[in-house]
Length: 247
Length: 247
DNA sequence: CCATGATTCAAACGTTTGTTTGAATTGCGT
DNA sequence: ACGCAATTCAAACAAACGTTTGAATCATGG
Image (cartoon, rainbow over all chains, first blue to last red; front, side, top):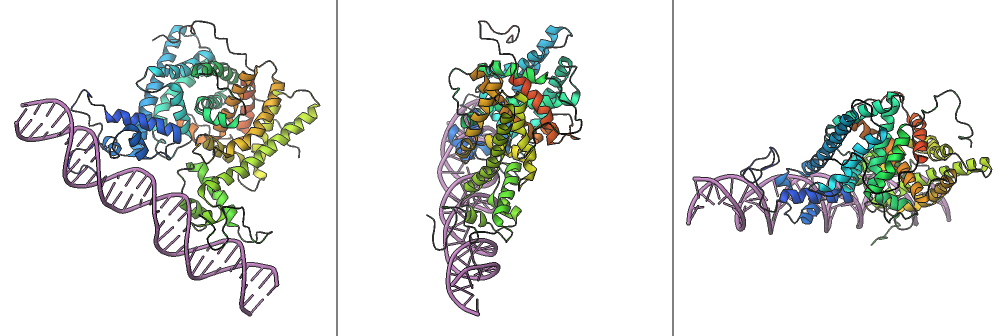
């Protein structure tokens, strides 16, 4: 399989300098950044290793040396970014719940715990939060196999954590209904910031000016909060809705 | 470039038998169905022509013969499905507005005009509506160029039509705010039914049983209606939100 | 009933894909 | 300064990609 003569990467883990510092320009990091940027821009399957390495100023073989394969590269891109983001989200939720001293949080607070870490992502060694969301929306609709294994592991813990908080915030909403509404919510999130392009395509309207990521979040929270605590849908009685299916 | 010896397709339009009937098993149709199914399942860039033709029981060259190129194939897939769907949507909205006799529609009615044609899509020569939405969500996050030209043309008319109706239904919501909320709404739609897989990935919960597309729509309408007429977000005053950004 | 045009087919086209190789190059430890 | 391991590099690999070709097949209209 691998490990021919010199010690390669891929199988084990990061080979890294000797142990500590990375004094050189760290090709690994540049590859991750370039891959993230390109995956976001063109999708996973449509981005070639040659584009990535060229964008990173590295040799073509660098990806397979540092990561082992293209699939392992994208896996690491998501692991790093999502791990950090979700850690911040859970920490933010913990903080809010501690401050609430046992009282259920407001829906808006829970939403802010989800959204705020996205805006603070500028601190991170890499790009801004909106880009990450765009990457995520892309990832969800491209379960080619590379992500099928990594996304659940990154999200399962976070989702059940926020689901618990939301259940306490909305005790009147049945569990199954709440599950769907949170599904709708995540959809809105990943699409809202991800699909800025798609919106530009669809809409005839220009909302170019003055709407940065923070402004979008400020608009998202009331929208989602209202949806989450909407009155329950009518129970399925018998006939269809009035005057709809006609013709 | 093209048109070497025998009359090919591609450039002009459908070559079709002589003029009328399609007595044979119509490879064209089988190719469109297979392409739609596979694009939905694996994405556009990740689906090869060999997979499509094999799935359709046709020869590899059939795609280039009937459509001219892979890009033209996907274009036709979307044109046919989206054209029919959006026509039904606008017709449904027209019907409702005619019945309302000049009075503004309820938000829920407008949403049903958007969603109901999705459920009736079973009548269409092809598959069910949920599959189409899944295909759409995929398309929006894959603007590789093939769809960049076709999606706006299919959607622009419909969006401004529904935007007008929604503006009349929600006169208290400012225009820019409403634009964003409709953006959020479309995101929820395409993700809600599209990402059944993604949800299965994310959630630890099983909502397998008893939730067909109609049930999802019944849950979606109250969620979206509440979000669309949510109270307006707080105007940007001065300081940040209380107790959020704290390290 | 043959001739014609539409359709199918097997095979190959030239690119581009991800990956591998083995030799240069680099940078640190002793 | 030497040597060793980590890294970079140019070049090639086989495989898969979309596309093209020219002959075989089919169905029909004159």
